[in-house]
Image: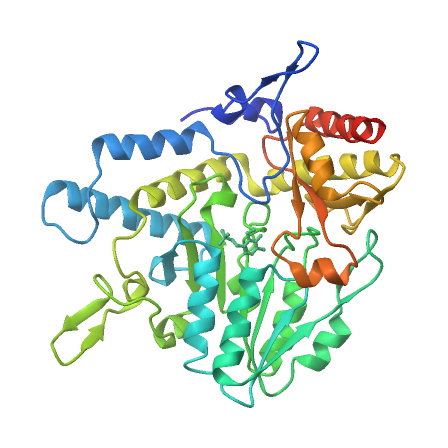
Amino acid sequence: MPVSLPLGMQTRSEFPIFANNARMGVEGRTQPLVYLDSAVSAQKPRAVINAMSHFLEHDYGSVHRGAYGLSVRASQAYEEVRERVARFLGPSVSASRIIFTRGTTESLNMLASGLSQTIVDAGARIVVPLMEHHANMVPWQQAALRTECELAYIPMVGKAGEALCLDIEKARKLISRNTRVVSLAHVGNVLGQVNPVKEITALAKAVGALVVLDCAQSMTCFDDDPFSWGVDALAFSAHKLYGPSGIGVLALSPALLESLPPFLFGGGMISNVTLEGSEWAGGPARFEAGTPPIVEAVGLGAALTWLEEKGRKAIHAHSARLATRFREGLQSIKGIEVYSPETGEETIVAFRHEALHAHDLATLLDGSNVAMRAGHHCAWPLVRFLGVDALLRASFAAYSDVDDVDIALDAIKRARLG
Ligand code: PMP
């Protein structure tokens, strides 16, 4: 087994993207790639790239469709990853509760669509925080339109840049007897705040509502089992976990696995088809119509192994330390406003300059080979609530290093002088 390298610069040597993306600066100095956009998608270690290309070169076949060796081997590999994901989520989670999807967005759409056919009806309420990513808002808006139920938003409370968080008192009022679903992110994708999931789950459970957890931003850092808190469904994407794009997970409680209707229809999700109608397969197969993301599943399995070798807690502590250093550096730059809370847990820092538009600053940073996202971050209601039209967001990961922080801060300072 390869030795697990320390986080930061040494771990970066496992990621070919960095060696392939250094640039020559104007003064003939090499500009390393400073990748501060891991919250949008993480880069991939060689372990993941190799696992996928090895599978393609040696073992590729379609799954659950052939009696021949390649198909049997591919099916075994695919199902082993389902077991791998279950172990990753916690000892109480069985593989039969793991559904492979295209990503968090598809997982949440699957839930919103299915629940609007079962437990959500006119007179019901769905509760979602205002700060959610569009992927955890728009599907619920559509479910509310279809069923004519109420969609209520948990507002934010506190001062931006210090302690902006979900308004738990308002949540207490909104989560009431007619609430059927509460859907929230574990970690916010814009501000990086860690939401009080246990508290919100307890409120939802007290009124018999289902809890859906969007773990797109939290799976790299937290190794708790959200099902042990009473969560009923959770979703995440492989590409934010150092794995490939094109695959994600929807994990369900046993009761939800039984009751949720299928989302897509076709091959692989049926137990019988006649000209008169069809019957659905049981377990996760019911939700996996069509040829699934087979190579991507292999990559996801390799990514989870890589991640666990590094340790999610260690990655969290490392990334949060760098975020704190970056935030402290920003505070000494005139005109910068920071929006993320300051608890020391955040691995994301959202900020803007009072005079220089976020998009312009991001373009200037690219001139120094610093990759940082600017915009509304797929969370328009939150960005509007903050009273801005765009924010910059620096996000830190296992391969981020102190050098990245210092280069980015220096580039921001120079952008202001230029
Ligand atoms: N929820 C959150 C909190 C996210 O950060 C993202 C990705 N930015 C999504 C959902 C959507 O994930 P994907 O694009 O992988 O479906």
